[in-house]
Image 1 (cartoon, rainbow, N blue to C red):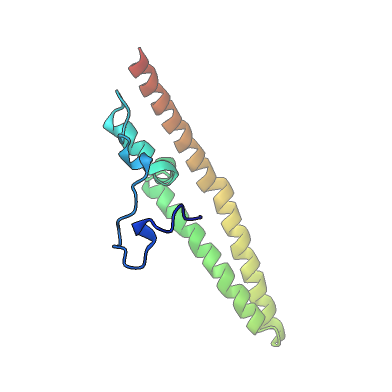
Image 2 (tube, rainbow, N blue to C red):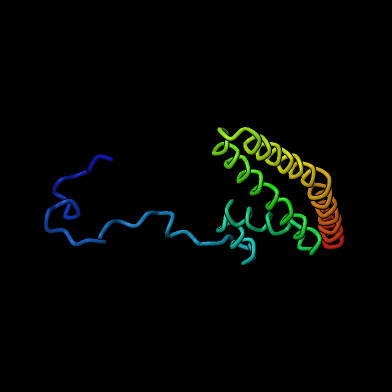
Length: 142
């Protein structure tokens, strides 16, 4: 950005730091007339805050969901480990093939758990949350 005037004290060598002009936006009120503090906070948080709330809201907190997520993660990690060991054991004919088969079994097992258990539980939870939120909004409107 170009300087407006070289004779301005802000741009001279002995200028004090932090003496810059404040923007007009900082002079404006932080929330509008009639706007609640919650709305102002939601607006201040922006996209990051909404994502954090949405993540907490759309993932079930049930023990069954947590169990299936652990099973899913264990299957994925074991698939990666066994595929790495299959690469290392590729010279030893039967062991490399066995490790690769185990890797495929774990990988397909992880996909199966995700498609059949985790996604169904998450969709049911989302439908329940939408039903509750729409019930709350219709009660507050009426």
